[in-house]
Image (tube, rainbow, N blue to C red; front, side, top):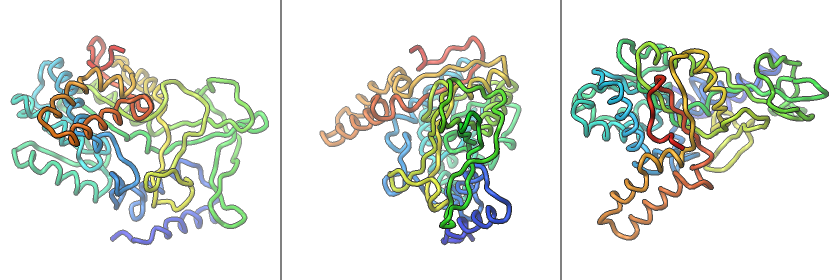
Length: 368
């Protein structure tokens, strides 16, 4: 049974550093977020007002409904294959999947052909997802849980959704110092607390810096995100289907430190209390697009902002439907949700939406 004292994770990290030397950032993130006993995502529920952050599916059902419509459109363009697999990476509480399935179930043939697959490593979140989908599984819709993407089934098209999944994957950072790139490492400071430092000189290889760096510049790389994207792209090229990745990040590679930690909806020190707070980094969508092109030339990718995608998919129209006949307070809540999801100064511009689909197939939501 997981220990409630997450300080032991910090002590294990410190002991590892003392015995083996400083660790890279990717190793630290993997331990802080995914340690089997005390990793941040392994035992608690970080979502919502009572947690550390709020994701778009928790803001409004409209988010998942519109994504469900997008999946239905791609399924129909694929000539309505039966069966087909709806896969979500990192499904949180199951809110997004439940909203998508409710929408897809409006189409009888899609409901009959549908099977659900959740890629989730956290036992506590798996339990919440099972509860959220209980009504659908009782109706006969099959649902399975997977700890890795390697166990996802073959033989039928994959329609994949990942919302705020790639941002939590471990990253490496390099620091430009005296005309050389050094790995950013984590060691022990004079006070024996965790501290950032300069590591060995590293060759960036094919990760070409997009601009002339100045001393202290930081360059980030997420090899696990690229590798996962390549694996998923190869799978889709083999089975058919489409994918939708939604996350905060940037369209083009750029210098900068995007590592951040969140606790109780406030920014925190990333090295403080590993296992007790969220750690993420902005997603480099250009890198993911290159991964798709390398792994599966038969697929294409398109990218837009979350605000543009949702508005084009009918966010305002759906908000109007939900608000019909509601009292003033409920209508204000719906309007607030629209603002939160699509306004440029909230989630609308920071969050990007990337679609992966077969060459020659167009996708709603991406005309802009």
